Length: 242
Image (tube, rainbow, N blue to C red; front, side, top):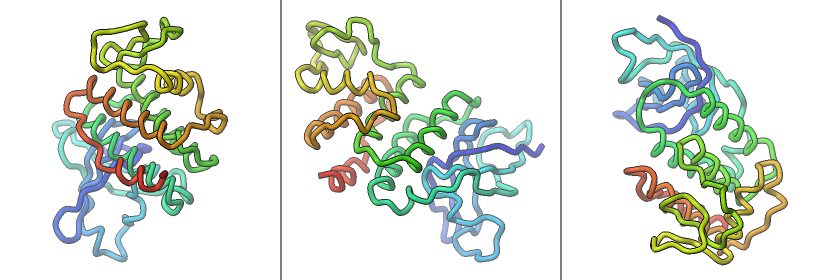
């Protein structure tokens, strides 16, 4: 049957000389992989490569057979759902988009049932990144809030305590765990928790502190998500934000 759905492009992988495999998080279908046959060589095809840049928000029509809901699918039609003008060409926004694309590739790794709440979270904040003034804390806040949708958002009980245990996800006075943060790191962490995306501009952390927070968040994800691993695009962020 034909299904029309909004979708967010998570990543693409070159296949052969002229094709791409696009992994999209679809509002109606969840994570799906699509074969874009000949898209790199065809100039007259219905599907354009520009539709499938990281974090592109599109609408597509695909055929899903009841007995084959997994595996590669084909897109019959696709169009821009929300145009991205700044993200592809603003060096800082583009670097953050590539980073978030890599993060979501790791955390949304299994095809399965759709999650409308997660879809709207991603879409809303991609639009925020596109439309609003850039904040160098955006990717940190995105990762932190994404953890809520993945089931390990920091427990805000006892936030008055001086430390945060990454393993338990709780604030504490002390802990035998080696994954405990305190001092300026935990103060910045608390501020990030207590600030929404609209108020990120009110927070100003030095680059050295942002770098440490990013490392902490990656450790946090690795502790709670098997196989999250190293994020390669971190080096690009460090280079651009230094």
